[in-house]
Length: 475
Length: 86
Image (cartoon, rainbow over all chains, first blue to last red; front, side, top):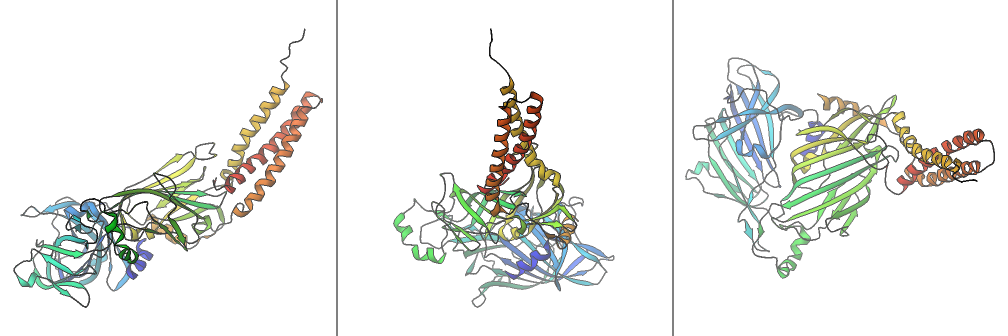
């Protein structure tokens, strides 16, 4: 996914912030969508909604903000909103969610994302922007239950015509599922119906002209999705930094489920064994093996679950393959813990002329591909005595807080624990790094052995004192 | 914008040097533990000697302090050698 690599190289400079500052109930106006090309990508466990826009300022004053509609029912599954100038893909724009909603006459509730343009656009001028909205959700299994050997299908609902607060002069829609798509509840108007392109394997709609603002037109699609829909309900990711050992240890606890179709009836081992060929191709709707993409040079891998050590694991280069104790079918859950160790020098660096100040860069996630995360806690444990100077995330987080936690041979306040709490992540978003600037002075470094030495010294002096006391009773 | 500043800082940072190489910490653990045993043994021998109390106390304190320091370093290196990173 080339757009993802380029995307993450500079995305960190422009964080999507989930805070709006405008009044509620606003009805955006002032723009006209000269051209709107929308692509819905349904290949993955998450949904990517891409808008290529040519917008024109039809107001009588310069405008700097553009509103993009987000269905209210999807606001809770919104992962990220990003935008860039179409002609300069690396020129990312500041985006945030509008803190309010609008309600249409038919009762439809709409939310908005706001895109801040780099400079105000003068009346009558046009600008081209590309916006992407990532949702932590895909289609729903259709039917909800299926037998082993059947092909899993998903049902996806969206808006057909451009749901924009502005008039759209010309628009098209493309739906990409990597498989054959069919429409459910097709409208009678043929101009609204989609055409499946056998060569590109996409369903194409439009073009449509002069679509009024906030036009509601439901689109229902049924498509095949042969692989599992991996969902991490909760992730607890602990990162332990040790300057004495020059290591960084990762430990992740996953509460995982499969959002795909559930089994119809009980588990049939014979039917399961018959699927061995499809298992080898990976075209199965249950979770058989997880491939964790770990940092280069990872060592000391382990995997445990509620029962104990999981031996069905394998390390191949930088991938850690974990085979759960049982195949995880639709609706089933599996909880497990994995861990590994890397050299600290891969993730931490010093500031020039200051060997007591460190900059730590830790990936947000290291989990399996094509996976969504409902809730994730990333805890970074810095050595006892470290002082956090600055910390930030490339991805909008729910909370960030600092406290202390005692660990082995912590004789004073304990390790410094920095916690980021995230909602609605997906695998690709985790490639970016959390950045933490902290100070770990030589005094704090050598305080560790001194603290331990105090206990040994106390014991030895205690021995001397007891040795010196004379408890004998002499006549 | 904090993240932007940190990203720019990242371009100007330099590699860190380990306090003690991890692979060498096993040998360091053995070495420091041996030195610690020597000093603690000497301290215990002083405590059993028939010298004046003040002299014994002073010498014992010095030997115990040095022994404790080496014991502490040995503890850290031993712990790191067994994968419990301090």
